Length: 525
Image (cartoon, rainbow, N blue to C red):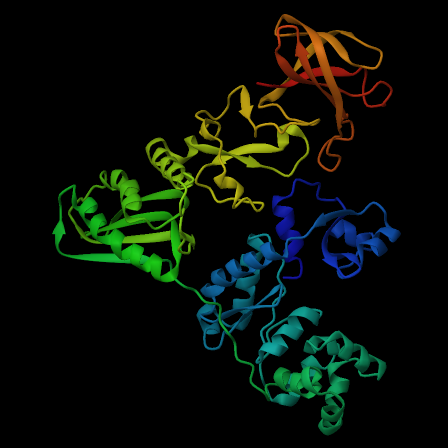
């Protein structure tokens, strides 16, 4: 998947498709380009080059930090998904999957049909994939990365097989960059030229990690290269089979009492904590009934887990009778043993998490929400609301536990005020309450420097007694229209002691509209 990083970024980025974006990672001598969009590639940006060199060719390149860990997580998920084609799948490097399709191609109509099915399904997922099927893993890697048009190869003798690999560059053997440069300086630029040399001479010149003979032998099948399949560890699961069908309504609750201790034992053995539990009841007629709950933090406390599911399973209809039950932790996270406190009182985080869990079960997960920080310096885009039991993102694993009481339990999907973190004393403190949408105000009088002295909001006149500011916030030029104007924010206090956060949008003569406009964006206290 040569474009895995940039295609994954494009799925979640709010950026025009023709923007010259480059994803960068920190290198020895500054940022290095990790992946590029099509527009950036047309401007000369290349993966592996330094960002300063690329910007020397085109200063308009937009650099965005790459996320190699997220790319690897996606690759591991794709490896589990690829089990549909092979029981042996391995993550191979930063952008490749290796599948052992020995003896399974006929199930898909042959190797060509198998390759076509793989390509179509990856295309439906929005991912570009270059595929090759070869008798050896090293040859398949070489063809998928360097062949002009990868295609299935069959072994009709080593000589015929070598003819397909001969035109490829020596880099297709996955040698070290220094070894590749040495071979190219010696005039050995292709695998065919390398294979024509005496093996003894190559073995003497290149040894250890740079052993060219070993690389050739792996590609041609003379030396085995075993595949280490990705582990597919099933989620923790406990099963209860009944001797006779249970037709009474309390059967699911009684089965839950016996299944929870078994599941907790598995969680403890694997040092996991459940984040989502599901109980499935299997009826004698082949149908099923189920209920599931999610938790705010990982937990394996039997009483808490059973209490969450008790209300859900009470409504399961036994129909003609249940003959088996299964309780599974569909989503689990690492959870080691920890001592909550030694001499002081516990912090209360677990009690708060249990409260959130119970409210989510009673009211629904979409009605119990928590604030979510977003990557934006524009106030209305810097935070949002997500379900309290959703997983954290952007490295918020620790911050999500530091809730601030009632502000996290947002009862309605849209209200006038948005709760934000308490302001930090200082010059650029933010208001405690932020309007969902800034409301226009009429500034009756302002000093020549632009400081407001009186304004009208919701038909009430406010005389300003104190002013602090301005704090200038520029628009997000990479996601806003070219006519977006900058803002100058002021913290003001009227004569009654009420404090507001207002801003002037635009500057006289900025060429992006008429006269500046005033808005009220937040309230202090």
